[in-house]
Length: 620
Image (cartoon, rainbow, N blue to C red; front, side, top):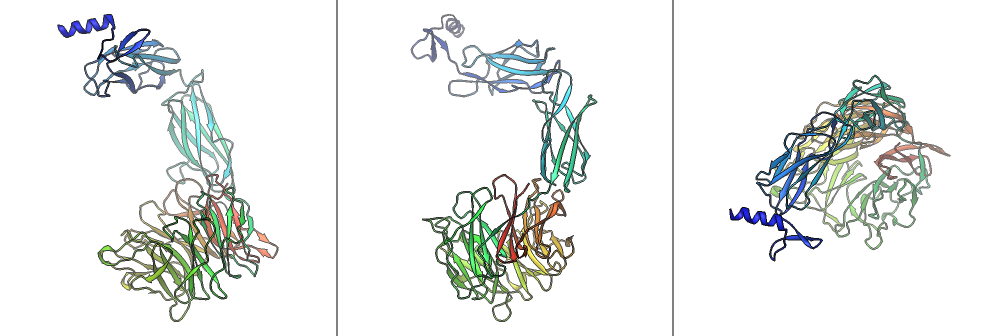
C-alpha cells in the first residue's frame, strides 16, 4: 500500500525532489524512469484492410539502458481507422511490448502511437502506408541504356495503386521478348519473378545478349493486362583502341606489360618492357585512362646489350609499402630489381641484379616461403620465380630465389633450379593443392603441356621431382592464368594455344589434379598469346580476355553462369588498331579499371610494328 501511495503522489504532484531523476519543463519536473523506443514494425506498407506482417514493437529500458519488464504500454490509432489486436501490452523480461495492426479502409499513411507513462520518448509513433488495388506498373531504372553486349544491368519496375502509392508484396514477372539476354539461373533463363518491396519496387539482374543489338524485356503483374517495357541496346563491350607509344624506337618493342599504382594514389599506371630497344617505360595514368610517359622515372637496365623480357610487380621492399618490380634480362642471364623510392614514389632507384639461369624469359613474384619441414610456407617476404627458357646449362628450368624483405633475392630455395625440359614459355603462381603454399605452373610451347611444380606441406618439401606434374593442353601452349573459374573454391587453369588457335580450361580438384580439359575454339589464324582474367561483363563471374597476336585483336570469353565453361561474346573480336607501319599485333594483355568508371578495361602490349605501343580498349 505504501508503494502504491508513493506512485500516486508522484503522478499527481510531479515534484522534483533532491535525488529523484527528472527533467525540468516550464518550472516542473517530468518523471524519468527510463526510455521507450521503436524496435520493429515501423514504415511498413500493405493493402487496405490487410494485416501487417511485422508486429509493432517497442522496447522499454531504465536509466541505465537495462530492459524493464512489467511496464504497461498503451497503443492507440491516431490516423487511418486501423485495427489493433490489443491496445495495451505489458513488457516482458526483455523489455518489449507489441501489437499487431490491420490497415484501415483509407489509402495513405496510417499512424499508431505507443506510450508508457514516465518514460522519455513517450509517445513514439509508427507510420504505415496503406495502398489500394494494383493499378499500374512502370519502369524505374534500367530502361533505354546503351551498354556493352553481355554486360549485366539491373532492371527495376514499380507497382502502384491509382494514387501512385507503391504496392508491396506484388509478384512481378520479367520476360525477355527480344534478344538472347538472360536472368540469373543460367544462360537460357529468359523469365524470372521478383517481389516488390515496401516502396513497390521489384528488381532483377539482367545480362544483355552477348551479341550487340536490341534487348527488350517486359515486366507484368496480375491482374493488369498492361506491362512495363525495358528497351536497351547492347554495344561492343570494348571501345575502339586508343594507341599509346611507349618510347620503343627499334622494330616493334612492347610485348610485356604490367599494372601498378606506382605512386600509391589509387590510380593504376602501366609498366612496359620494350624488348627490342632494351628499355622500360612508365606510363602514368591521369585517372581517366589517359597515359603519359614519365621520362626519367626508370633508370636503364644494368646489363650491356640488355634484352628485357617479362616484367612482374610486387612489394619487394617491405619498408616502403610501394610497388616495386623486376625485369628478366634474357641477354645477360640476370634479373634487374627496381625499388620504388619512398621520398618520391613513382621514381625508381638504379637497379640491382641477381644472376639466374640461361636466358630468363618469364618472371613472377610470390611469397613461396623460406624454410622446409614443419615450418614450410610463406614467411612474409616476396620471392622471385624465374623461368629460364634457354638450352644448355641452366636452361629449361625454374629458379626460385628467396627475398629478404629489403629488396634482395639471394639464397635459392632448396632444390632450385627445378628442371623442366621442353620449351618453357609463361608462368603463373597459385595454390593448386590447397596447402596454403603457392605452386608454380609453366607452359611448354613445344609439347603443348603444362609443367606443375607442387609444394607439399604434408611432406615438408618444395617442388621436388615427385611433385612435378605434366598436363596436356594444346599445340603451342603460351599464356597462362590461375583463378577459381567455377566458384568451387579450388584454383583452375586457363591457357592459350598459339598453334591450335584455342583456349584450354582445366578445372582443379584442390589436390593438384585437374579434370579433363575443355577447349574453347577461336577463329582460325588467331594466334592467341596473352590471357587475363576479370569480370568484364559485371555478372559476378570471372571471364577470360585473350590477346590474339596473329589476329591483331582481343576477344572476351564470357563465363557461362560461373560454370567454368566459356563462350565468345560482347561483340568480339575487338581490333587493337594500327600504326603507320601496319596493324598492332598484341602479345600480352592486362585487365583493370583504368578510367575509374567501374568497368574493366583492357590494355595490350603490342609486339609490332615499330615503334612499340600499347592499345587501350575501354569497357562500355
